[in-house]
Amino acid sequence: MIFENTGLVGLQSDLQYLDESAAKAGFIRWQWEYYRATYDCKIEDHQNGGEYFLRINTRAVEGKLEKPDAVLAIEAVYLGKATFPHGLEYESPVPQPVLDTAAQRILELKGLLEA
Image (tube, rainbow, N blue to C red; front, top):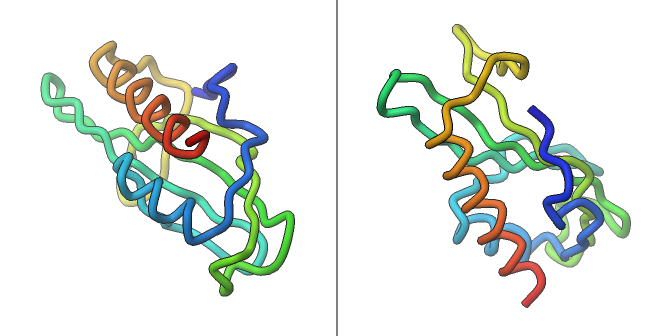
C-alpha cells in the first residue's frame, strides 16, 4: 500500500537529523547503501497476529550516507505485511488499527522534519 499525500515525499534532511527524528517516531534505518536508505517502523496487528512495516525510501541528494551531513530526500512512503521467511506483501487489505498507527507515525515524523 502506497501512501499518497503524506507531506513527507520531497522533504529533505541531513542524515544525522533524519536518523534522530526517525528514531523518535519509531523508525530505524534498515537497508542502506551509499546513495539511498530505507527507514522501517514495525507495526503489530494485535487482533490477527500479523506484522506490518511502514517503510520510507530516501535518496541522497548531497553527499554519501557514510557522512552525517549528507542530505536525503524522501521518495516514497508505503506499508507492507511481513511474510515468511522475509519480505513484504503490499496487496492484502490492512486492518484499520494498523492504518491508524501508520498515520500517526507519518504525522509524527513529518512534524519532526518540518520543525
